[in-house]
Length: 151
View 1 (cartoon, rainbow, N blue to C red):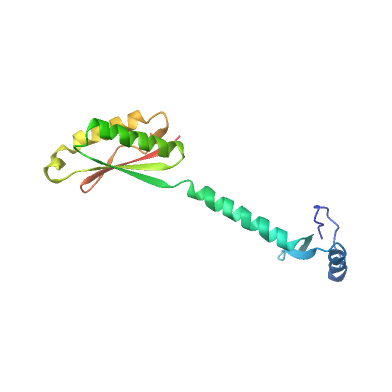
View 2 (view 1 turned 60 degrees about the vertical axis):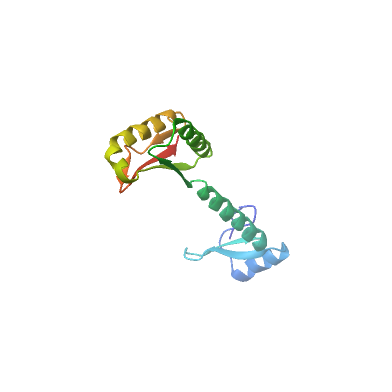
């Protein structure tokens, strides 16, 4: 038996524990039914459920923070446009999001995949102060993919 203050009262009969809970206008909750003997606690069950719900919501929002954002760049994208994409990636990384950078190749551009790799490596080097990459760019069909994780 445990009180709402966390004080342990020891082993007692269920009737006596229920009487103590009614006296304090609180609920008797079985915390650990598998223990020998089972552990019960006197607490306000409504308040307990409310706190549990809030903790679950907080955990859910914390897990959403690790979201993956995507940036797409064409092989022939100009330098200024790449800078804009870099700035957007920087904002994502500062908000603790991972960024998936994809470079798209169309038609005969596939002959210049190595040039695309150097562009992506340069892109990640510019963002090295706020991120680290998961290795070299990987080729998936007509795209080169690189994932940046926040520091």
